Length: 535
Image 1 (tube, one colour):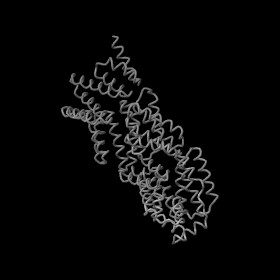
Image 2 (spheres, one colour):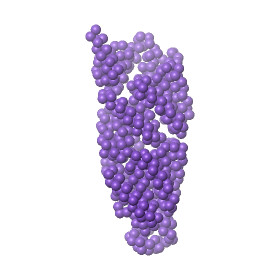
Image 3 (spheres, rainbow, N blue to C red):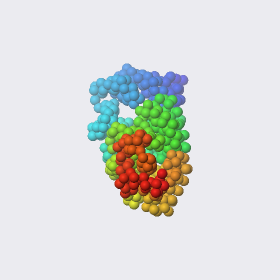
Image 4 (cartoon, rainbow, N blue to C red):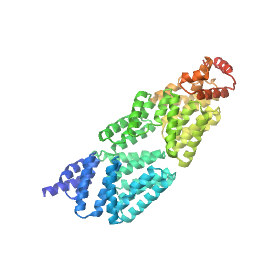
């Protein structure tokens, strides 16, 4: 009776989501397969993955001994799926293979339906979205027939992610909304709850759905906070919170959350460590802590998180324009799909403009605008409008640039993104100044400066002082630098060596200078520079 009492206490702790207590009791007392499964789940949720695997394997063998082949197949699937999820490919494949053998003898059952999920994920990760969509749809149908909530939820989750990547945003998000309803209603198992939350938020990130990301991150945070013993998903939750805080301008709080995430994930050796390190790198870069940013990006890369576009923007902030250009170009070449490219395109535009390549910047802007139209995401529209405004201003059309920049500013303000709004106001000020509208320029610049000072955006503040001269002819900072070297008598080759860029890039800068100033010779450009006190 005492043992039964302990088992009862362990089961109650499990139901109340007191995972550590449930694990302490059930891992010792459990004999029946259901209790062994509970112990395995509790172990996984407190970060004891090896012990979780052993307990679930015991449950599998116990079910086989009892002749409960259908439940054994389900247990085998979760052994395989969780192993694959943790990167233990060989062991995972072995258990999934055993699951396949069992379901052949059983026919339709929950395990047979769940076996579609890994295959569909392989299709999705490989970019074969139609095949993934069809397989996830089949899994949903099987879950409906069998009344298996875990299968239905994983199927809807995968299909929602796939549809968003196919550009069917409305349909994909509708499925993700259904997933969140299911998990908040406690209709699925604890492991599936965590997977569903994190994958849904990640899908929101991919499609730039900031509102849903913020809402669902809060829900995930509340779910985690009710389970203080919970280890998996806590780290990802902290990373998501840090990213939302960074966008909303709470950089100090975001830094705290990102560091907490890094520490939490380091303890369990989770691959999401790369997410936390990249978030830290971004915050360090924005605050001008370049050495710390580079170290964070390097570590993020070791954990499988490509450090782009942050690293390219860091190189730009360091004045290494050639390195920034090559880095972002390589990242663009490797990016698969419009959504992944959209994350890189704003940086590509900024770097190309600083490098004087107006054509490349315009091409990237057009691609970004097309993706924004297709996805119809407010952050993407804001990025595209700002990019177009930047390109038009750099091309000598500040009057045409202003409506785009003004629209971008309105969008950033509605998204409560103060840093992005301030950067847009700087561009607006520069456009107004070129048009000799000094009042508007001063107003926008003063507002931007106050915001950037509050944020601690040191590099952006440094770039604002001294303010651009209205008699600089619309030249960029890099073009003024090239003009000054022209004035010193240097050839294009010498300028290229001085600035560590290619001769082709120098020639493009020289051409831009001549076009903007309406000149046709180096001698005339030199005279202009001295006449307007640019040297």
